[in-house]
Image (cartoon, rainbow, N blue to C red; front, side, top):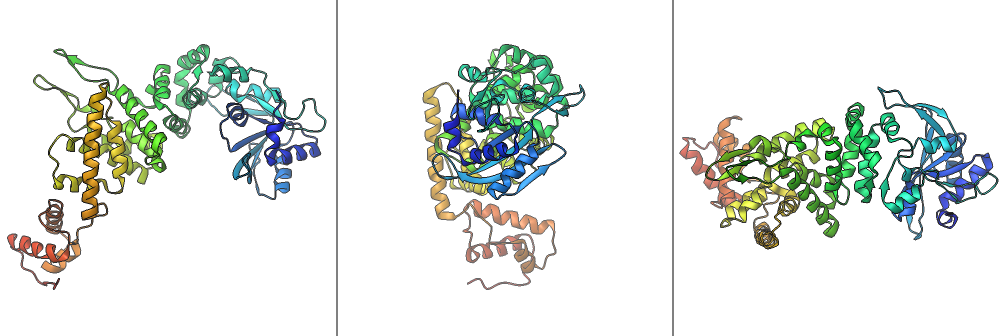
Length: 496
C-alpha cells in the first residue's frame, strides 16, 4: 500500500522528505499519525523516525519552515510546531517530533529504558501495539523503500480492519517493559471501539500489579483519555475485568455489587455510575452541552455517588437508603483529586459542587416547586447550573422508558421555572445588598459572629422572598432585625 498521494497533500512531508534526502537520512512517519491516516481520523501530531540523528533532521526542517525547534538532547529528540494548510486548504497547527531510530531494554524495577541507536526494525519492535507500529517511508531519492510505501511488519493494517488491539511482541515482555501500556491498551480500545486480543488481555490480567510502579500522573492521563472516549463505560469495564481498576481507583470498585436483605435489594451503583457517565458523554456529543468543561462534567458523573457505600443503610420499612451520600461525596472529592494528581483548582470545585448538589433538582421534580427552593438552587449552583442539570438528566438510568420520559419532562418544567425566576431576580450572580461592612458600620460592631449571623438572616430573607434584594427594602429589614437582637443603630443611612 502506498500513501504518496495522501502525503503530498501536506506540505510538511515535502519539506521533511527534501531535508532527509539532503542529509542522506532514511526517514519515516510512524505511529499514531499512520494509524489515524488509515482510520480516517483527524490528527495533528506527527512522529518522524530517521536512521541517524533526529535532532539534525529537525533542525534542517525547522530552518526550511522558518520555525523554532525545541531540542531535548538527553532523549535524542527534537520537536517543532508549524502551521500549514491541511487537505481542505484551511490552516492547521501541527506538532512534529523527530527522533533517531532506537532500541530499548528495561530493568524489572523501572519503566525507564536503556536506549541505544537502532534500525527501523528495532524501533518498530519497541512500539506498544501493532496498529501503532506501522511506518511510511518519506525518502524520494535513494533508499530501499519507495516514498509513501507502508511498512507494516506486524500486520497492523489487518488488525485495524479486525478492530483489534494486539502487541507486536510477546505481551508479557511488552507490559513488563512498560506497564503503562496496559492502560494504553484499554484506552485505545475505548477510544476506537476495538477489542483487545485475548492473549494480550490475559497478559494484562497477569501483570496488573506492575501498574503500581508507574507514576500517578501518567496513569491519570490515560484514565482521563478513557473518561473522554465515546463510550467510557467500555474502558472502565475493561479496567475492572483486567484487575487494574482496583489498583488505581478502589473507591469506584466499592460501588460494585448488590446487597439483598428480606428480599429488598438496591441497584448496582457501579454500573449505574458507568451508565450516568455514558449518558453525559452522549449528551455532550449530541448537543455540545457544556463541552468546554467536558472532562470535569464527566468526572462529576463518575463521582456523584462515590460515597454511597459509606452511607448505605437498611430499614425494614423503607429498604435501602444512602442518606447524605451527596455531602460526604463532596467532602471526598478533594482527597480523590489529590490522590489522582488532578488539579486542586476551579475544576475540582466544579466537580465538588455538582456532587454536592446533584440531588437538589431531582427533589424539585417530586414536590410542589416553591420560588424559595428555586432561588436557593440558583444561588447555590450559580454559573454551574447548566452542568448540574446535565448531570441530573444523565442520572436517570431506569430501563423503563416511560419513567425516564416522565422524569425528563419534570426536569423541563423545573428548568423553565428556573429560567423565568433567573430573568426576574437575576440570582445567578446574586450578592446580598446588605454586606458585612454595612452591618458593622450601622451598628458599630467589630468583625464577629453576630455580624455573620445577621448576614445569614438577610441572605435567607432575600432567598425566601420575604424582602427584595434592594437597599430600599432590605435596609429597614436589617434595622428591625438588629433591634430584635438589642442592637442600637449608630448610623442610619438615608437609602431613598
